[in-house]
Length: 279
Ligand code: AMP
Image 1 (cartoon, helix red, strand yellow):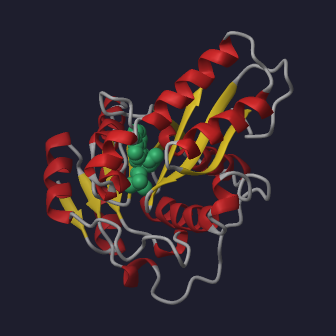
Image 2 (image 1 turned 180 degrees about the vertical axis):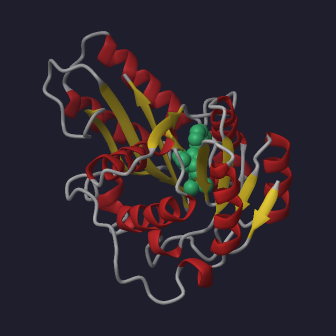
């Protein structure tokens, strides 16, 4: 694996790949890599391309009370995992490379998509995500890019960006990778205490139970959402939302609609967990 700290070094290497007729698949990350990330790398490799991954903790997508400073940074261990996964190029810029001066040209996602659910509780988050991903796309110029459905709303925001701005990039989803007890893998799981870690799979169990109820014909989404929020609260969580939405655009569905996704975000102690399940 070649590690590139600068845009110039990465561009020179990828120009050579393109000249050799290689396709380029890109998996952006914030590091602290786990099986969820690595599964995306494998999916990219199956795509038969030269694989580029990036590690960059993007300040622009963190709110003032978010965990930017304490976000886990584990560069050496991440490099070993990327080598083992068969990644060809790692782009690991510092802030000076990506933001040499304050970023004034920015990407504003769809007003609804960037303010509902995650956007309501993390104002400005998707503006920061879309801005850095467009910059990374322009630097890497990949044929395909892979994003996990663990961050369902992010996947929709970035798919819409690529579609509406006519970027010539194929956006591919990766299924959510979970621990055996159902907890979705996340860099933030490392913040959980032992007792919180034992409690955390409740979120997935709750989403699974909700899915069963919907599949059994219960279409009173408002009541289902309220019950699920109360259930989390009664076990010490501070839920922010549990929402049944349309998969395609995250709008609230009518009672007859199919193609749904249930999304949730809740604090367990000081740790904010998100998860979702397609119905
Ligand atoms: P992050 O480092 O958290 O920005 O994530 C980088 C990429 O990995 C994003 O596309 C995430 O959606 C994806 N990802 C994170 N966790 C998981 C998971 N448990 N399963 C699948 N993909 C994931």
